[in-house]
Length: 200
Image (cartoon, rainbow, N blue to C red; front, side, top):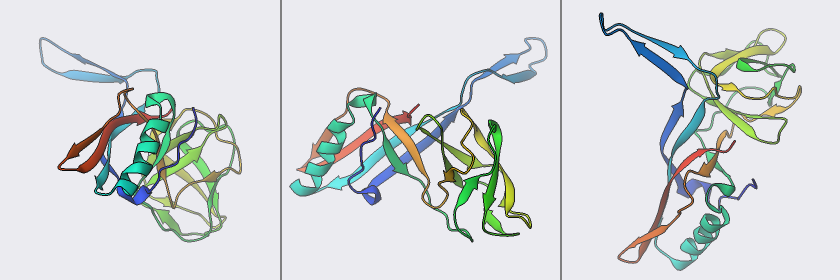
């Protein structure tokens, strides 16, 4: 899988974002009560993206090149997510061995709130891929600049200690969900829209 650069990130819109969590749900025929049990297997982001209306040949040309370079689900791109500002410099992986729903981080911001629940982090993985997570709790450092990030979905690999976590310009590593990509036109105005899933 190769990364394909997005010609104009500001022109790309995320229309939906979904997280599939493998779960088995059992319901009693007698009482109607149900119980849900998490199943093994990684959670998976998916969604839909679109590009703003393409009214000129110059605009359309760069997006045609992008669309066909994806090769359907063969390659991937960075879909920008809502960015966040926070005090201090970067945020880094503090220790190795972390998987699951938490990660110890280090920052130059001492005893400060960095990010709120609901904001995103993009974490580089040793395989060269990325895992984007959504914080489930406030991320605040202690007097040593340390904190534990709590998030969903779970990490699928243990990040390398010292790796820089992308917190100010998080993105979703997306691939097209289908091998059939198209441009549509209405009265000479082009538009591109397609379903996506996390590049894994």
